[in-house]
Length: 264
Ligand code: KIV
Ligand code: NA
Image 1 (cartoon, rainbow, N blue to C red):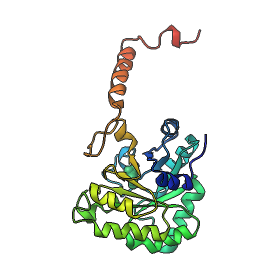
Image 2 (spheres, helix red, strand yellow):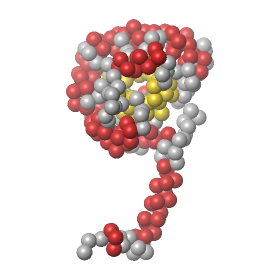
Image 3 (spheres, rainbow, N blue to C red):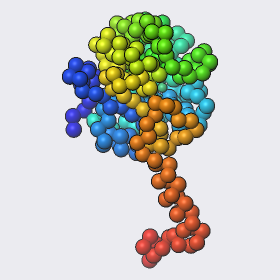
Image 4 (cartoon, rainbow, N blue to C red):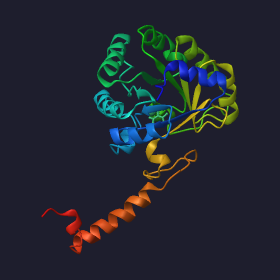
């Protein structure tokens, strides 16, 4: 299997081949996601919600991202691996940011890092990319700004001039891809047509160069809330509840373990 690299991802945009991305947070799901032909796997700070049960992404730590990225890395053969930089790890100073970015790359096996922010952080991103670290930008709805935004709000309804400027500044700063989250279709289309690096959409319509969704959303495992842009491709929760209920009943009725699952 040919390992996906930054050059492949950029070429896919040029060739008009869509990029399929998913999140993963552990070895077993990484192996599954890799086996179905996902091109890019993100260890997102969404793990704060779906793995840890936090109410938003803000409390995720660098150590948590490293821990999960190491596990995912072991499950991948083909997919390109990106790790999210958590809130607070690239906000204090350039020096601390570079130390944190270098730490994730060295310790986790991630091949790129994703940071939320537009032109305001372009100079910082330039320093990271100049250190030889691949960066994915992330603009539009930025969950790490949830308090600043006063909730999760769809972006670009104003025509999206600022978003277009952000995308161009990020490209200029050296990102090899940009996540567009919660951006209205027309603006996401315009951004995708205006930059040379692939855009990866989530809740941003069909014109992006690729799409990403959260593992637990796609497979119907997380239902604390389900955003409009989530399409459920499987109902794993139902499967687990059905199988799991049988298991509990079998244990209660002394029907498990039977002879077939016992040693003599
Ligand atoms: O944390 C995450 O999972 C993300 C994506 C869904 C883009 O940032
Ligand atoms: Na994220």
